[in-house]
Structures are given as structure tokens and as C-alpha cells.
Length: 316
Ligand SMILES: *[C@@H]1O[C@H](CO)[C@@H](O)[C@H](O)[C@H]1NC(C)=O
Ligand SMILES: *[C@@H]1O[C@H](CO)[C@@H](O)[C@H](O)[C@H]1NC(C)=O
Ligand SMILES: *[C@@H]1O[C@H](CO)[C@@H](O)[C@H](O)[C@H]1NC(C)=O
Ligand SMILES: *[C@@H]1O[C@H](CO)[C@@H](O)[C@H](O)[C@H]1NC(C)=O
Ligand SMILES: *[C@@H]1O[C@H](CO)[C@@H](O)[C@H](O)[C@H]1NC(C)=O
Ligand SMILES: *[C@@H]1O[C@H](CO)[C@@H](O)[C@H](O)[C@H]1NC(C)=O
Ligand SMILES: *[C@@H]1O[C@H](CO)[C@@H](O)[C@H](O)[C@H]1NC(C)=O
Image (spheres, rainbow, N blue to C red):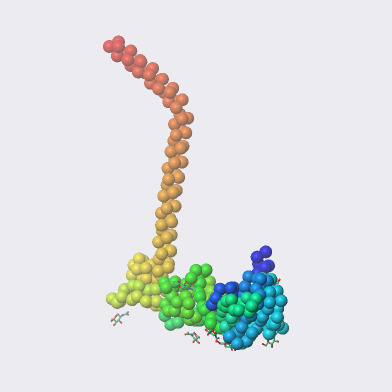
């Protein structure tokens, strides 16, 4: 259901441009409209009780004026509509020249100015598309650039597998720059989102590492500690002992995986041990119950023997 509604909204946006809403009832409101789209400005609660009102642009041009429910003039009537009953002014097919300062003046029945408030309308072109390009650098780092088309004042943000990129994954850049460099061991679903006040567009790409491994070993008397391309690596691969072999060819990720595996194995072994112990104990208990009758008989035999012994001792 939500998917269907989402698709319908997308279709609406595509066919009629982006629609934004702005509450202009507070003085100094900042409103954003999409180039070619529609903005709905809430100028007041209702015009029904207002003797006279006027909307000026840049303190000079009277765009709209009215008396209670009657609209006296609308300079852009061909692409806008004012609804006095709920105080909304809807402007379609926005162009750059619609941007500017709008002042609403309210008068009493004698024509005295009662109050006035202003709002800023800022027109932005929506972001139309996002391009995500990645490349491997010489040390196995990955440079990713995110570029957008069309949008005014684009703001960038990044996520990896749904989580904001952190400094531990980044070699350069941050989660708000358009070009970033990722560390050698970073992989997953990378998403770049570009947004401004009238649109958000994002692009996701599955990235794998550049195939580098971290080498940390002593070879021919020198300590080697660096990232190398795994496929063509010749450093530290001749095994002197098996332990140096395992540590030298492991990336930090592999190592933590191995530690996890060992821990899991230990826990499983302990659990199996406990289970076996209890199974054995239970069996023993059942056997004990089972044999209690037999034991009683044995006990009787014993007591007979004892009696016999006692009697024989008595005889002595
Ligand atoms: C409109 O006039 C007010 C004061 O009357 C002034 O503060 C404001 O800057 C003016 N706006 C423009 C766009 O000229
Ligand atoms: C105001 O009225 C118009 C016309 O009836 C309607 O399209 C719009 O949704 C209403 N807006 C609000 C905020 O109630
Ligand atoms: C929107 O405005 C532009 C110029 O600002 C005009 O060329 C175009 O025909 C208008 N579109 C509609 C649907 O009114
Ligand atoms: C209003 O002022 C803004 C800048 O303050 C300007 O970009 C715009 O063209 C002006 N509009 C008119 C109709 O004078
Ligand atoms: C970027 O990261 C900082 C701190 O890590 C965080 O405060 C900020 O909200 C993030 N920005 C985005 C757009 O996710
Ligand atoms: C980001 O990278 C692109 C392409 O590599 C380049 O054109 C652009 O200038 C870079 N932007 C910044 C802010 O460094
Ligand atoms: C070992 O190191 C020495 C000097 O550092 C060098 O001359 C020699 O060729 C190296 N041997 C190998 C097998 O790399």
C-alpha cells in the first residue's frame, strides 16, 4: 500500500513539479519553492474576518489584495489562487523571479495599517540526478565521488549499509563532502544522498574492497607493515613457521573473525559438555531408581548374612 502511494506521489511530482508548503503566519518565515513547481503559502488562518489585506513583493508590487472573502486583485491570477476561507495562497509554475521578500499588510475598516509581516521565498532547482563513481587508489584505498545535476545548494550525506559513515571508515572527507576516500577494508552498500530544500535524490552502489591485504611481519630482518595487493603479493608468504604464516597474511578483519570463531567454538564445546554431563547424570539417576528394588533385595540378603554373622558371633 505504502509503495503504491509512494509511486503515485512520484508520478504526481513528475507530472506537476514539486509542491512545497510554507507557514508564513510567523514574521520572518523562510519559504522554499521548487523551480517549475508549486508553493502553498499559508498567509493567515482565514481572511473572512479581515477588513482589508494586501500582499506586497519587495515592498513595491501589490501581488494580491482583498476585502474579507472577496479578492480585489491578483497580479498573477493565471498561475495562482488564493483561498480566503483558509488563508492559503497557491502559486504554480514558479520561476526564479518569484523569489524575494513578501510582506502581508493587514488594515482595519478605516484603512489604518494594523500589522504587517514578511516572508522570504527562495526558489531552488530540484536535484535531478546523482552520479556515483568509485576508483581504487595505489595503496588500496577507494576514492568515491558523488556528483549531482540540476540542484541549487546541494547538500551531501553518506551511509554504508544504512549507517552514517564514520571516521574509522574514512581516510579523507567526511559524511557531508561530495568526494571521499574509504579505507582499504571498507565494503558494503554505499549510498550518497543529495538534497536541498525542495528535493532529495540518492544513489546506492555495492562496493567491494580493492583486493588489498595488510601485511605485518618480519622478513629478512626488516619489519614490514603495509597494505599490498593480495593477488600479486610476494612479501612474507614463505612460511618459516605456521604461526607467522597465519598472522602475516591476515587482514585485521580476518583476525577478528578467527577470534570470534574460536570463541564460538569454545562456547559450543562447553555447552555440549554440560549437556552430556546432565544426560549422564539423568541416566545414572534413572538407573539408580531402577536398581533401588534390586538393592533392597541385596540389602536384605546382606542383612540375612549379617544376622547369620551376628548369630554366629553370638554363638562364639
Ligand atoms: C522592505 O522594507 C523594510 C522596512 O520598511 C526593509 O526592512 C526591507 O529591507 C525592505 N525590503 C526590500 C526587499 O527592499
Ligand atoms: C485550503 O482550501 C483549498 C481550496 O478548498 C484546499 O485545496 C487546500 O487544501 C486548503 N488548505 C488548507 C491548509 O486547509
Ligand atoms: C511556466 O512558465 C514558463 C516561463 O516562466 C513558461 O514558458 C511555461 O509555459 C509555463 N508553464 C505552464 C504549464 O504554465
Ligand atoms: C525582489 O528582490 C529580490 C532580491 O531581494 C530580487 O531578486 C527580485 O528580482 C526582486 N523582485 C522584484 C519584482 O523586484
Ligand atoms: C555527519 O556526522 C556527524 C558526526 O559524525 C553528525 O553529527 C552529522 O549529523 C552527520 N551528518 C549527516 C548528514 O548525516
Ligand atoms: C570531486 O571530484 C570531482 C571529480 O573527480 C571533481 O571534479 C570535483 O572538483 C571534486 N570536488 C571537490 C569539492 O573536491
Ligand atoms: C636481505 O637483506 C639484505 C640487506 O638488507 C639484502 O642484501 C638481501 O638481498 C636480502 N635478501 C633477500 C632474500 O631479500
